[in-house]
Length: 98
Image (cartoon, rainbow, N blue to C red):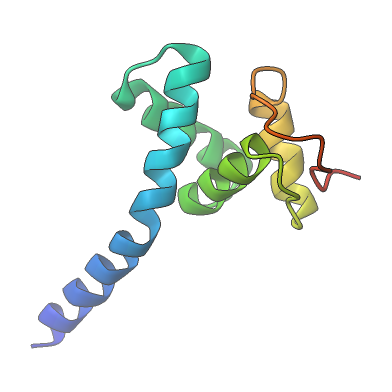
């Protein structure tokens, strides 16, 4: 029973983060002409190199690409360093980088 409950918690967490990861993959596919697998590998590599969760990095990438402010300065810095020169700009909003 304990293993079932742990599995259910992990599954629920994955279901919450999956949409934003898929959106971030879509952005990378569009700006880098990558496959979905390569886009995820790039997200995973960047998250490991910068010690941030894939889902948090993905959410920051989506926010920045949409022209919305990223309130976490560290995440904003990582996204700008990794993809800032290739991201589409949907508006002229601030990106939270100080």
